[in-house]
Length: 153
Image 1 (tube, rainbow, N blue to C red):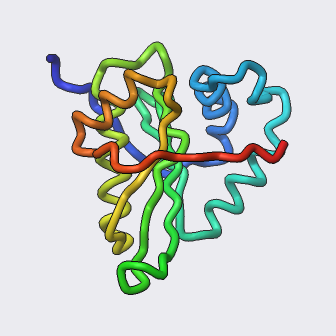
Image 2: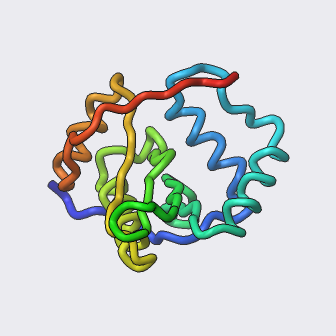
């Protein structure tokens, strides 16, 4: 396997939102879930996320955002009130997949969680995303739980 390209990981900025929404749209299992014509709700969400203990981070290659993830940090009662991190919305633009960018993003998420004092990093991945499941397993994650969701839309 070729070495991954030179990727920089940085916090997302409002100027990145059009590209972020494009990438989210490519990664969505539901067509039309994302709306690239109205960035206001995404800007409000990014501002709120930035004000908390989590982050939205992007992978940048040659000045272009090619991937992203959201890291949510929260406190548990268990593990003596320890902190936990959840990785959400990890996506790489389809034109840049299978080049090591996902591995760089995942390593950055784990390192951010470690730096925040988290005792665990967790994530969920839709059952339809078999390739993603293999990716996470290759990177040390275990299939330890069965997840459930209730959509309130």
